[in-house]
Length: 298
Image 1 (cartoon, rainbow, N blue to C red):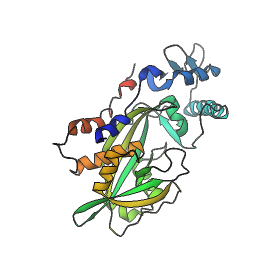
Image 2: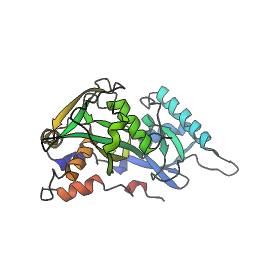
Image 3: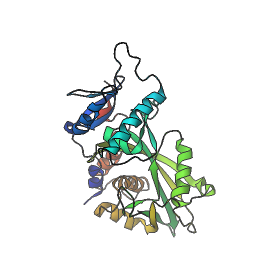
Image 4: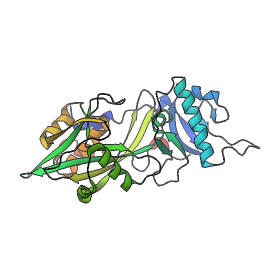
């Protein structure tokens, strides 16, 4: 196994399995053909053609869904019906914005659990908490609850979560730190935003073209993370050698957490430029930050 394999596993997709979701002449997502067929039940909201799905198409003499709230309500009604029919697994209760670029105005909102079915681009925040002892780095690693719906029992970053609608990056990372690891505000003086990574992976339900904003947090050796929201069973403080080996040689981590750690290993000089695949690792972590190929505007 290798670091590059971890990156490749998070970038596996076959676009022939999908058709574009188009809103106002923009490709805002991609959905599997079978899921698109389910949407024929709502012809006023979706126009399903052999080549695409038009989302809330405007028709002659029809003002369409004129307001932000009307769009949100229509999409919510559809997705709740699909959950009842067993087409979508569940609702999450957290809303993601629909847009093709992070700095674009929000077009509408979608439940987090439904985003993958529509292939909506999503953004999240992952934080590597670490300690320096005797010149060596150790990293705090969480083990996800065995009751989690996604990736139960797998290893995770100390703090990680999606970025929901209506909260800033700065406020959300503080909230996630408190909820997931009991990181009080005075510890966050050393918090550093260190860039972003991206990936695009096909799943059973759809496709995930995601971007993660990354953070480093250097902590005192006396700090002990404690989960408050029940999502983590335990935290372990592991030498960086052990963390690197787990990433490189196993699949014990939630896949996108592998990427966040590989980025940390590169930035802190653990993975050296003369290591095999170094340049492919660097480019593979950030290949789609600005123009994910499936999301080019028509």
